[in-house]
Image (cartoon, rainbow, N blue to C red; front, top):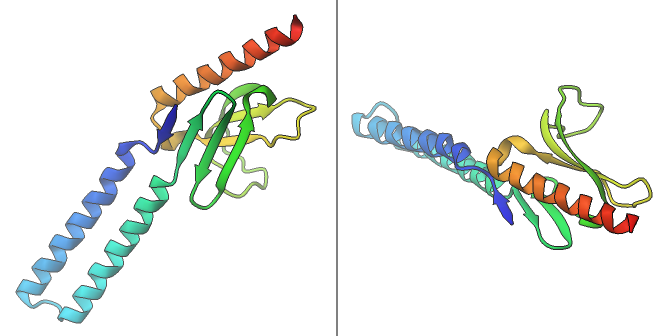
Length: 152
């Protein structure tokens, strides 16, 4: 299962770029601004829009039979093996605890106490809630199956 950032975050980017482009064309045709300034403004908006698009596109969450991998543009890629997960927690927390990039609404995959795996904090707001819930349930089911196998 692979998740990408939900479409609702792309729409404001596309609208902003379209409106700014239309405004630049209007200003050029009316002679309200010189062409160099207008083209510079257009290049800046389209460049920032492209950067924001790439940032959103870099968010991915993948689960296979062995591990869960979370990738972001600035944070890179982090993985945790399914058998190293102790529990799955939904967190809504507005305190940062000194963590850079701390997101208030997140899905946390907590490693087992004896595992060297890092705690995986996933920005839950950027993904489709229904699909993220399905993935969380799948991970939780894998954790329970692993716990039952250990008890046998």
